[in-house]
Image 1 (spheres, helix red, strand yellow):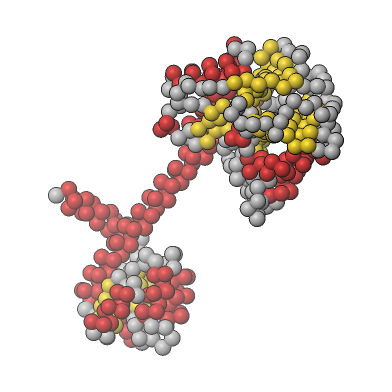
Image 2 (cartoon, rainbow, N blue to C red):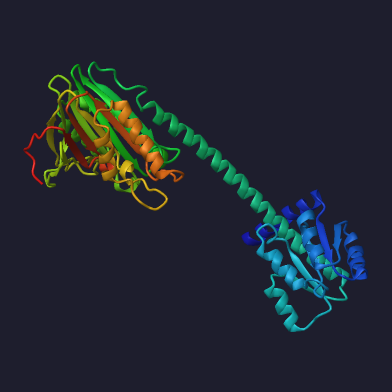
Length: 437
């Protein structure tokens, strides 16, 4: 009973649509008399009739007139009705126009050919007027219902897109607000930062945290998944890190306390679709050292150069967990006047060119070796130029974020963040030693 009432409602809706506009019907036959007979029968119901007298003309008329239904003869000198039907049903823009094959052919084989070519119905000449009008009305009703469904879908998609664009704009505004407007102005220290987003919504962020008068926190983070929820979680994480960095003087305590808040308040769970990792380093401007989290399970790597050593120390970006079982250890590197510290996310070395090659850590190291005396801004700009030259017209596959700290002198230090931090590389113009391969 429910289905019957629904069908009645749909039929009434399509009939109302037919009353609001005059259905257009294309009659195709190479015999003018046959065209005239069908045209007269259709005129009884005030249909708008257009005509064509051959296959090629029919295709041109369909493109120009966009009929609601086609009455199609089979035997014509240029293209058969089966050919025309097949062509129209294969094209996206004409696929859903109902086609009735009208022909003197009445063998079962001919009906099978009509069905195989995509025809929606079959009438045998001479055509019975009542049968013709009944089938035409039925197919036009189906066409109108289909068109209405498509229109509703388009409106739905449009509304969803408007909602998405509104959420996207909100996400962008939120993200823009928690990226620093400018880098801190510190006497004797130059800071520079850059973010190259892969999409409209960033998955990375960086931050500078004034922990105390002589201590500055550097944060570089990567988030994935979660859409707008992920953006809100990024904003919340930034607030938590900032608050805990000031309240807890050590790097490990600040990260652990932020993670505990996330776990205890269930801000991040397995089903959220959000993953978050963050690298936090604390610069002691008075003592000139940098404290960060080091993974003791990974060995150090030393590459000897002619005039310098490139020393890579594995650093561990903290992955926010759904449990509070974080096991992290701090490591400290002393800075000297002239050092340059660079932090960058994994997207910087994993970005691909058109040949599928990664930019790689090797290329990043080459840039550092060639620009040891550059300022922080100069180094960031050089890396950006080399990255864009490398990928050319290829899209950035993953957000790229960089922070550089520079105090001109003898040493250069690289903090590389893989999925927010993986390596710490020290480029030492003087052989300090103390590291093994």
